[in-house]
Amino acid sequence: MIAIVDYGVGNLRSVENALKRLGAEYILTSDPETIRTASKVILPGVGNVAEAMANLREKGLVEAIRARRKPLLGICVGMQVLCRYSEEGDTQCIGLFDTDVLEFKPEAELKIPHMGWNRINNLSSKLFKNIDEGTYVYFVHSYRPQICRDTIATTDYGGLFSCALKYENFYGTQFHPEKSGDAGEAILKNFLAL
Image 1: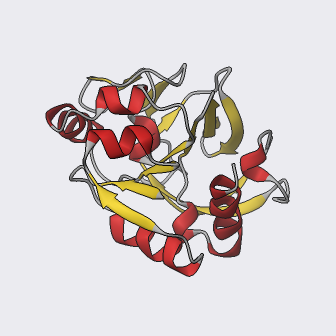
Image 2: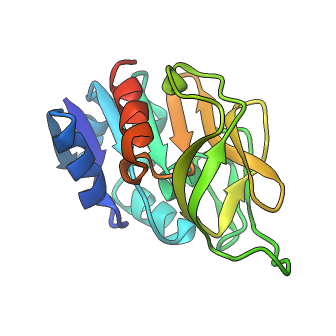
């Protein structure tokens, strides 16, 4: 069973719809034991990292996430909360990924938030099986994880940043696979097959 973590942040319905299209069985939950033991967990997120971390702490989910030994996929803010720290709200995060999340610095040609389709490169994980270098995926974010030893894919937008991370059984994508068409569907299938 796949558990979609319901912790008071947006994007649950898009993830649900993507899993329905794949024919996957899932539940929406904020139960720590279910999150600790489900075969797969998806931690979606749209919004503010400080609020997301406060919600995770309030629901007792931080330790349940840390205790997981089976695959977990964080999407967008769901990935950022798995990092060490975010400039958004000066927030200490869960600390599984060895990187910090920094705000895009405004430049003349750089629109913030980074919204729309962009290429992913330097793919180095089973998460990207049969995904070509330079594939386009969909982004909506104003903060981005820095390159680190856990980086498994990069995107260039005002400089390179980590658009996907992996540490042990934890995976994260800054982009939204559930909104990324056929490529995103393939990435979700790869996650479900881990």
